[in-house]
Length: 141
Image 1 (cartoon, rainbow, N blue to C red):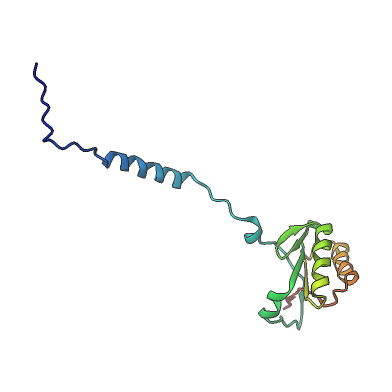
Image 2 (cartoon, one colour):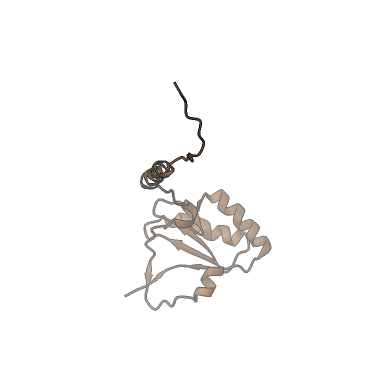
């Protein structure tokens, strides 16, 4: 039996099936993957703030420099839309008061939140020397 040892024929590997498999795997993982959003950046606190007649909203520039403390209807505290406890809030506000005691604090409380929790935050600001505290309300009809 004679074996042909002629190397004149060029050998190659067909990559088309390999690329097909790679693209099918890519499509599979793209379709089945769920993306988890960063909770701290995309948290929207559902607050139903009180309405007041004759209210004029402060400028956008002043609101961006202010710290916003929110209390939702379940009594949870949020600092700039990040959930925190009262102890954490005290620690953060104490550090901020040492650096900038004139910093504006905006207190946004839900209508159904207990007034006691809103009063606790106001008292905390007062004890730390933060006197530029305002309450967020909506324009009444």
